[in-house]
Image 1 (cartoon, rainbow, N blue to C red):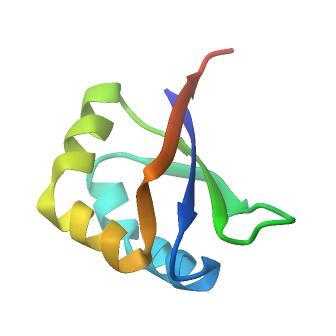
Image 2 (cartoon, helix red, strand yellow):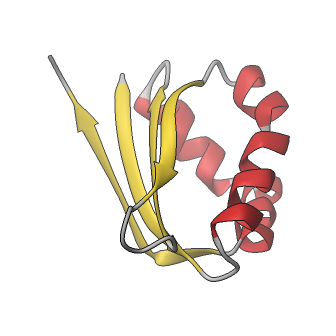
Length: 89
């Protein structure tokens, strides 16, 4: 299942990007594949991700894990701005 996510960051894109790249082991553990990520061309604090996840349940459970919550906070993700959209072909 492919999910497009977007959200704002408070600590800048580079801080978020480094935390995202450093988190590859957790994604691998849950079978999540990164298809793309990047920032908005006119607003570098607006980030987009495109990921392939085995199931919605895995993604929902991962987002509730204390380690993931802390990682996202440290990366500056503003949770209230986050949107996730499942796309189908």
